[in-house]
Image (cartoon, rainbow, N blue to C red):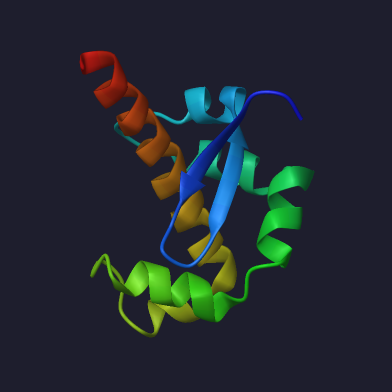
Length: 98
């Protein structure tokens, strides 16, 4: 797959396509966009290899969700997609600003 953009987390790495990263809004509602990305085969394959315990360890560090909320793997996948795409956008912005 051409144009892979990588997001590095503490417990795993993921890649996204340029189109998917660009489709993620910087503000406002993004649930629809996250859902579309979450259902793409290349994303499903990556998350199939990541145990929910790793997602929980990653997300607990943000302090935005409690232990009960973090038991839902699909919700965790969507959270990580959102964070990953925005991290890539932020990194690219910072690189352009240098």
